[in-house]
Image (tube, rainbow, N blue to C red; front, side, top):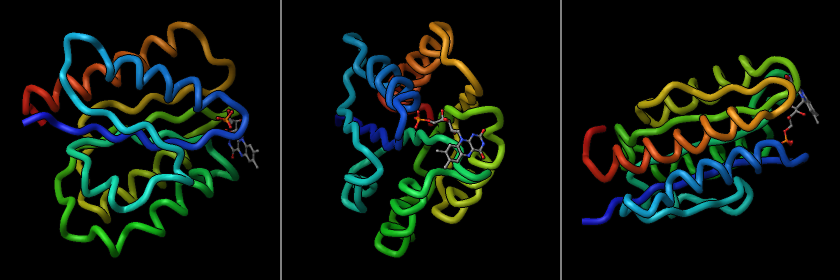
Length: 153
Ligand SMILES: Cc1cc2nc3c(=O)[nH]c(=O)nc-3n(C[C@H](O)[C@H](O)[C@H](O)COP(=O)(O)O)c2cc1C
């Protein structure tokens, strides 16, 4: 059966949006047959989590934490999916000003609460976004999709 990959991200200034689009491009690789939902954290809800066989989260770091939009997504969905999404594989990308560790650790901490399983190294881009960063994001999307399709997570 076809597997489902959910990409949920927030971006105010465009950096994480560009990273998210690169992840999407990788996930939509023509040789990989996986259904993909690409949603702003504001638009995603618990139904998307229940649909997903794998998830990629993307967020800037704001005030040493994940963006409020992604936190709101988690706040809105936790009780609705608790116990129904155990061991869902996920990965995370973070585009920040100069740090990103607070965003990364806060996403990881919350994902432990959901019992999600981190299956790829995170991508953290502080400062200017380069072509090679976008390439890494594309590879992340591709490996998440390929891993789901192959059932290796
Ligand atoms: C309100 C606010 C708080 C921020 N706090 C941090 C921070 O704590 N650490 C950091 O590295 N960057 C911080 N930044 C910078 C953003 O993470 C950075 O500009 C990021 O690339 C924005 O992503 P976006 O273009 O996808 O919105 C902050 C930006 C804003 C607007």
